[in-house]
Length: 107
Length: 120
Image 1 (spheres, rainbow over the protein chains, first blue to last red):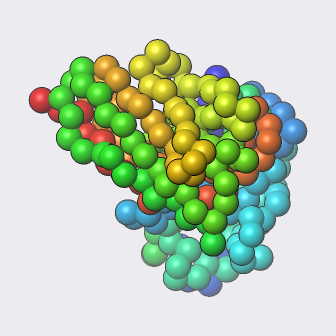
Image 2: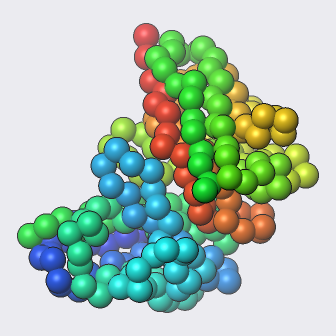
């Protein structure tokens, strides 16, 4: 099973700042089958990025994904108030597993 | 507009059974791969089961032999039959539409979730 490790566990930032979230896989993720989700309290996850770098429908361009192999990054270029949430990565190249999440909180 | 609405959760004793439903609108369940994903209280996400367009299914090792995913095409509804429930099955259960057509996929639409609590 591919284990995904997200870092940091918590990111404390102010609105307008740049957020950089990391997702590291224990083995190479085939075909960059890596997705990112945003989840707010009491809500379902929302797909942001799939295929490591493709934005899902309706996702603002301040969200971007990059990486390949074992190292992937989600970048939020300028944090908006509604972006403070928990973010999960998921690999779907070999079965499917999720990372443990990174919480982006207001500083 | 794509919508997924789960129901059927509740409090159940260990060893008991429960069936979850997920009513879909805005698309056809049988034309898409559909999954169940769960989230234990305060924890991360765990994929549980998938049903493919041809009707074949696949399950996570943690639920193999206990959970069965199915669908009713006439009702455009997805189901999860959960038997031999354990305390560690306590979670919010989300139904989700697979976004691709590979053996495993990302999830592009999610329901709001239904809480299953396994406790005596």
